Image 1: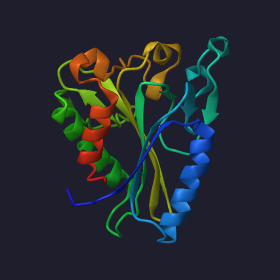
Image 2 (image 1 turned 30 degrees about the horizontal axis):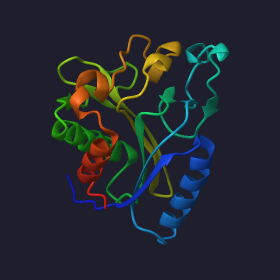
Image 3 (image 1 turned 60 degrees about the vertical axis):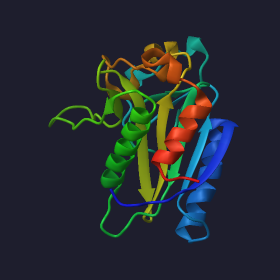
Image 4 (image 1 turned 180 degrees about the horizontal axis):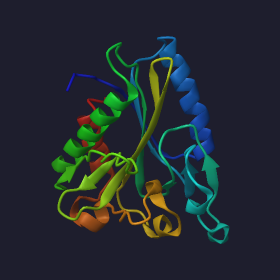
Length: 212
C-alpha cells in the first residue's frame, strides 16, 4: 500500500445536506490544488442515503420519520445516525489509480484500524453476478461493520465510509441495507464493547489513514 498522508478535519454532528455542501467545496479545492488530500471525520443525525441504483422496495417505511436523501455516491442504501463515525475522503488519485483501486485501499486501512481496536475484520471479493460486497466485515461473526460508497470527479474522490461504533442498530432493519436483504449490520458496541469509545475509534482511524 502506498504512503498517502492526509490532512485531518474533525467535527461532531453535522446535518447531512450541509455536509454535502462542504464536501463539494473541499473537492473543488482539491481539484484546483488549493488543499491537500483530506480525511473529514464526523457524524450525522438520523438519515438514510440512497445511491442511484437503490430500488424503491429497499426504502424504509416513512412512518419511522427518518429522512431519505438521494446522493451521488456509488453503492445502495445506507443509514447514518449518532454513534456512527463517518469519514469523507477527498483524495487526488494517481494516474495509475481508479476509484475501485482506492476503495480497496480504504477497506484495507479500515481493517487495520479495527484490528488495532481488537476487532478482527476483513474485506470481501464480490462473486460474479452478486451484489457488491464493498465494505468491511467482522472475521469471527461475519457481520458488516463498515459501509463504503465513493465516487471520483476529475481525478478526486468524494464520499467515503461509515463505521458503526456504538449507535442504535434498529434503523438498519427498517430498510434493505447495501442492497442485501439478509445482511447483518453490526457495531463496535456489539462486537467489542470495551473498544467502542468514539474518541479511541477516531484516533485509530486517523492513524490508519496517516491523517493528522
